[in-house]
Image (cartoon, rainbow, N blue to C red; front, side):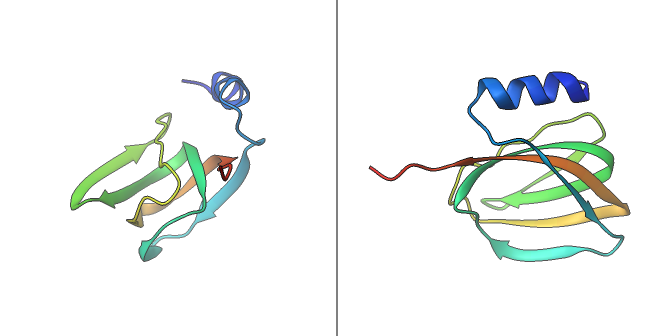
Length: 93
């Protein structure tokens, strides 16, 4: 996937425009969750997420999705990580 395809996918999926996020070498965040659906696209380095005890690494050109409320841990790879992150607000019924 390239950047334009990513932006097109966000728009089609009802996500807000992507914001650029950079995390340095050594970045790690303990278990947390977001009040929005997240759809990041890795542009440099890599990031590892742990969801339900399962560790997954995402590198350049890869997209991952996290539904709102999903508890997870995250850590930047040995070169840090940069990504574009689309967010989709969760509507309350």
